[in-house]
Length: 174
Length: 418
Image 1 (cartoon, rainbow over the protein chains, first blue to last red):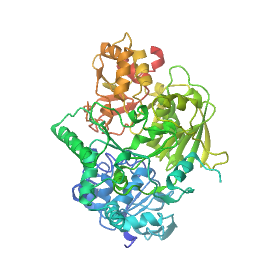
Image 2: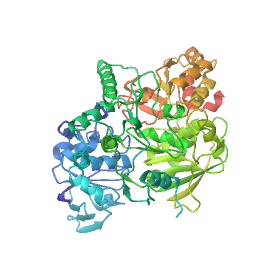
Image 3: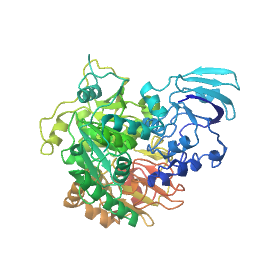
Image 4: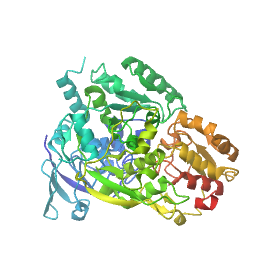
């Protein structure tokens, strides 16, 4: 998998809620997990037009406690559907697991990163090394990447394909 | 090398010493799954070609989020859950009207012991930390555990909290827990296990420990765990099968930080919208008119919580225009509340009782809130939309504060009623 994303920055503040902001709560209550159903509603509570504007390869940059709240996966599946990368100052552990599960490349601990970019900046982010380049500003930052084990899960496409592979390896099917 | 309680439990599960920060795949002693997710994991296992659970005897399934089905869809899901339980041969199944809240009744019934390692679907399973058990929620990847026996876990750091001081009259562990999560904050708590001990440990009963274990999940902890002591072992007597091991970190174990927390906070606390850690003293929101109050949820559904509420409600009436719901956590707690005469107090005051379980807190499936209304309750979260519509305000407080506010028709300091 190519872990380098080149695209526009979409910047958000802190405390984006997983239910309501990132995805309407009703989808979590219905346990809806179809990416194609969820994708058009991504970030609806913050910017209803977001899903129509973001392009594959773009990068969402957010402040602290991104996707806070009960760790429902629906919002992260929406981000996956839009093919976006995720760079956040911090993210609660349940939502970090869900980002990995949804197959969303993420830099989960990037202190003050929101001070180094604005919506519309051209970014280049390598999620396997933690290199964050703001081409508009000509500024380069380094953050800790995810553990190799977790990058492999994302590279496989997230939770489902990774589990299928493990089940096959353990001979648990059939 | 000295280890934290969490490192010891995970080392035992792995059969080798583990170190903080490494990714491991430990097998749990117990797995819990609730309600509708049973249908989801079954579908996932079918799609993946898995016909048998990895360890069906370790799985506990319960129906607590919507025990009384309020739609045909919910009744249909309950029917499917029963079929799935039979198909996989799950012995530990607590159907609607049996156990009650899955984050509470397994402790009452002796499923949870000190030093155990539990993995769960649902987030507030860290309640089990009250008994010195390390219980970690996984949500989606519980399917991995059911299919393959484990899921990835990063060995967490431990944030040690030494409890000191004494609880003041009119203050409960809910006030203290909410004040504490606001004071500690997500930056400090993220990914860590919060471990409780200290000189005031023995002054906090198991019900209070459950509340203290419940709240920190809202600031991102991986789990919460209490050191064991005489209070733990007294609770376990007659419930679980001995032997019971003592759980505590070694002297010299490596903590992320050690914080002293004084139980003697001065004023009842309320979480104001929109997040549980937006905590203020009750005086700052006093006078706010309310429409809807409830006592319950995995944070505050114990007999102690019901006694607290009843102490306020005895001989009083709920204010006109306010509805008040009480949800005992478990079948046992409901029965005990009836025996102690608490149910009569609630009903005489004008409250309604629901089936044991999560109550309205589970997304407002039961007794949701209407547009423009204000609720104060003992639920776990106050996000906009938590009780149904986004266009409502949710405040969280102790059973004292919620009951007193229901009587007054507005948020009040409960100490005026005690």
